[in-house]
Image 1 (cartoon, rainbow, N blue to C red):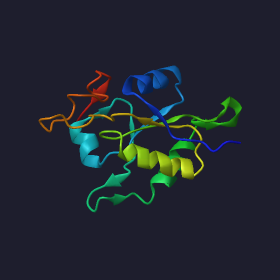
Image 2: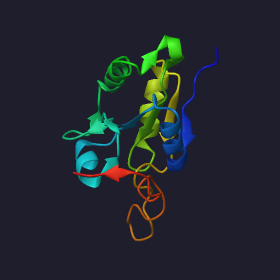
Image 3: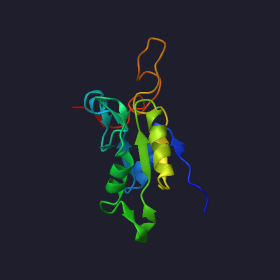
Image 4: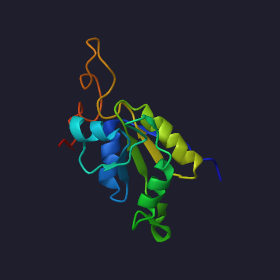
Length: 143
């Protein structure tokens, strides 16, 4: 069997995958503050990859994802194993690192959302003006 690889989707492609496959799970890997105050995709599960106060990689990240995936119908051998995992962060960089960790841990169907929730900085150092989930007008919410 070939080694699984992290795959990449645009925000719109990610949304389409989530709509077509109700078993797919969207996981926001940003910090607690980003998730709560900047906003997040509607329906996303929040499991930080790096978080305050020390901004270290979450040593429990892979275990927390494994617990989520084994916690019900998300993983079911009768319907083809574990559901796709779609990871999103601010600009699509932290989610790549988180995705690689999941692939290395044996997860098979992992996707990174290119451009993340807010995209890269524009010439005025603003996010959300060039690309990203929110830029594309996809469903999101904030506290």
